[in-house]
Image (tube, rainbow, N blue to C red; front, side):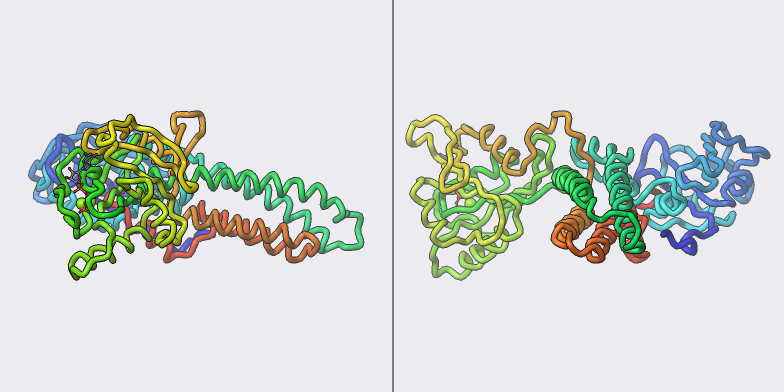
Length: 452
Ligand SMILES: Nc1nc2c(ncn2[C@@H]2O[C@H](COP(=O)(O)OP(=O)(O)OP(=O)(O)O)[C@@H](O)[C@H]2O)c(=O)[nH]1
Ligand SMILES: [Mg+2]
């Protein structure tokens, strides 16, 4: 449950538009004093809610500081659920700061980052997943990320969680009744039915997890690194992906030492590419440090492109098994122009292999398609409804899956089964924020921008 002490009666104000000069600047005020503050600054006697008013803004000395629009939203029909006022004035930073000072002089306090949205959450205007989607839509770096955040904001993620939660509660109630009245007619042997229902729920959770994972990748992007022996063409490839001369390309092996990073947009997915120092035995301590760094980068990457000049290099990677974690791998056989070959794709040692020429820009589209496929993100244009999700949600869904599995293992022990289902329900409610620690709320909202 939301802690009512978190809701306070202080009126808050902030500049809601972006920093810098703009056509229009917005000041937002929320709280019980906001209408009074607006009356004092604009001189109007009666402010009509949900109407736009053309007004003069005056400072405490009675000087006109701008003319603009006043938008009023009487509670509870407002963003925060409180009385909200918005001033739309000319978008000059000095003017906006001056006007903000006036609201503070009239009794408002400056809002903390995300405080408007936090109030919207605390006043039950939106749940936590929706509140997070507000930040996601602001920070979205690609079209797909915007669409997904809008879907979460619209409640699509929360609706799924709520419906699953309801189903779990129903089953729990039934099991608890069996435990409370063991002698009654409630027949726990109906467990065949329960098992069937739980199985259906489990399938829905698996599906939700997959979609959430996609949503998270589209929102946050992921890291993909280019590794391989010196001189195989890693830097040529990052330059091609980023369409910039970011990394130095020479025919001297061991050119790249420090990792080179680029952010690209591949079919609407933000990808952080890292070009690394070529891996080889070396006595040069600087190059060796670069290679150690490469191994670290491999560990933190979701996808590793291993660039090869010859296919027979593959067995060395397999032998040395430097990829001892669950990273996804694509073999990239470069320089096929030297063999006058056309780009092709096949499988090698259980991973996809794409042949390309980075220098002559051949086969790159096939490689891009494989990257998207390796991440399970193909067919994004399909009918599947994706929503933005965060690491926090993925972790909650993982916990939900763990306890769902444990529930299945405890089918013969109704007490334990009920206990596991309670945990499933609890982790579900952390997603929507019904059951969330205050410090977590603080952390989530502090990452918002001011004025939101
Ligand atoms: N013919 C041909 N040459 C290539 C291709 N890609 C890269 N090269 C050449 O191979 C040499 C090495 O390229 P780089 O991109 O610097 O290779 P690297 O893997 O980054 O090398 P290090 O930084 O030393 O590890 C350069 O002379 C490139 O022009 C290709 O597709 N075809
Ligand atoms: Mg290089």
